[in-house]
Image (tube, rainbow, N blue to C red; front, side):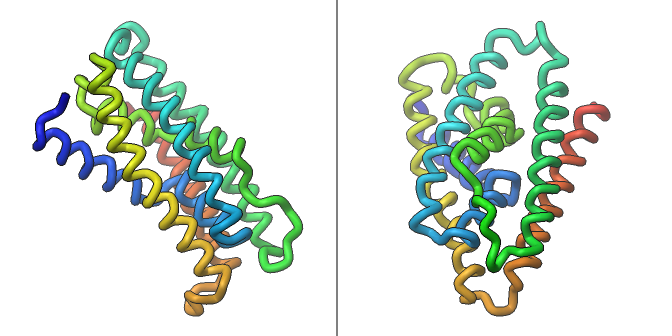
Length: 200
């Protein structure tokens, strides 16, 4: 079990990473914009599942075999960058007819895969979560419990932000411009992944 100070530091680290813009948060905001809060809430479960799988796999890998496969993090960054670039292009084109678009909004599978490939999973496992989180079942459950309690409100806030744009509550922002801005965020993020993979 973690001490009070370790638990507080873990919570702060998780919160800071979760609220920063990235591919998953961008997709959540876009979903809220297109289909509203109520229809987008199930996406939180897809995000949670993606992060649990990613953090668990990375955590166990880093604890047991990080030195044996030093090339794997770079490969994952490249794969993630390619997929996120695809999402960026798709989001840019769909923004043209955003107010009346019949194109399906972000689905559970898309959000799950984007979260699974999100480098934040590696950041959580290798930096934010203490090594003790992967050394015992009790430590893992405590760390994941904190993570779940912080992820749900953070994801809901991003969905609500997108919905507020779609409902015209943030009149100073144009929904189509927000959608294209989100695609640019995803594109820049994909480039940064490729840069990090080849300049380590």
